[in-house]
Image (cartoon, helix red, strand yellow):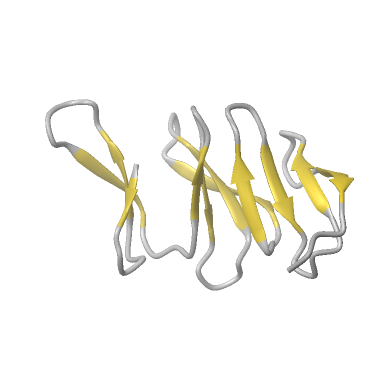
Length: 103
């Protein structure tokens, strides 16, 4: 996975030579786990998840101050830093696991 410096595109490595496939146009931030690609929408700040099988992006949450992905989990800090949330894996469902967080 790589992103353009101008935030104009996100590409995934094809696994062959120097082959890359563009999977998204303009984006704000990109987060990756071992198996999953996430990005924030440049306009709304919403967090989206990429489905490699379908080649589509799905909104899984609203904007956040920041996000972090581990091998199996996605975490986000609320825009006002009042809480830390973990994505449950179901569209739009997040569980508060801590907070507040210093800006």
